[in-house]
Image 1 (tube, one colour):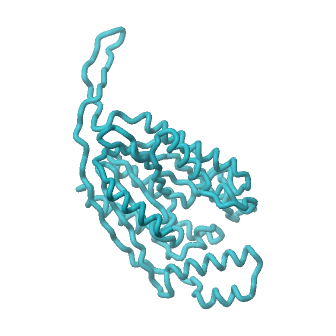
Image 2 (cartoon, helix red, strand yellow):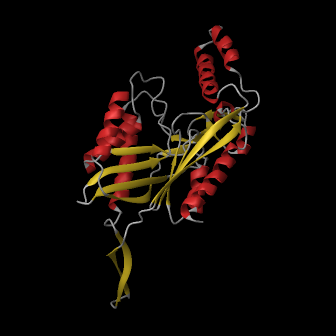
Image 3 (cartoon, one colour):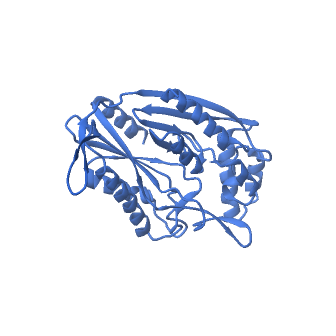
Length: 329
């Protein structure tokens, strides 16, 4: 895998070319809230019909100077958890069919970026039927392709050319040449964040694993050990965040699984830009959830995360601070 990735990087660098990136929001309702309350107050991971969803889909088309599409970017927030214990095959879940459908229709590769899906997943999930993630992938792909079809000609903008007198006064909007925004800037910032109280150390977790607990408990202990290994044995851990601006596209990425509220709020704050939020960048630390959700002790993201309360709000404030720098606000 290392050798293949290295070759891809070298080939990409050798084949650089001028291109224009167009971006636009679309809609896809695959992702549903997955914090479900059952049995009088217990939380489970599964479709919550009364929860808050996020159906926003980001799509970008990259075209070269010959107007050939050379890549498509899709940023969508939905856990790839369609398949579960009944499945015995390796699978990219819905993202595989999404990739195949985009390539078939555009003859271009797909760059998929997982959005803030901490509280979002497919309504129909945890199945062994491999046809289900294939349907999900087509659903996201067709929504992305519809968004692409709604884009105008590259390097143009719509202007009101004339008002034509007719049965009604008709506004004739036309495409007019417009210079692309060539701004390119990046930044990195690191939060030194407190590890939550009571997070078990690696030595304690290894001792518990020696007792050979049942499968479910063993899986939980192994996940806790993985998390502790990533954050280290100290009382604080670095939480890096990366930011970028490419024209009117703003990127926010980090190694956690943030709840979707953070991307919804950032879109509202920067309406003149399209926002890409990327979960689980570089490594995986844990969930980034609003402070009030820590009170729900049986909520999986609340007891899974190794990060002390306040991390969600801190990441949001840091994002505003850094994006304001990149946009000149």
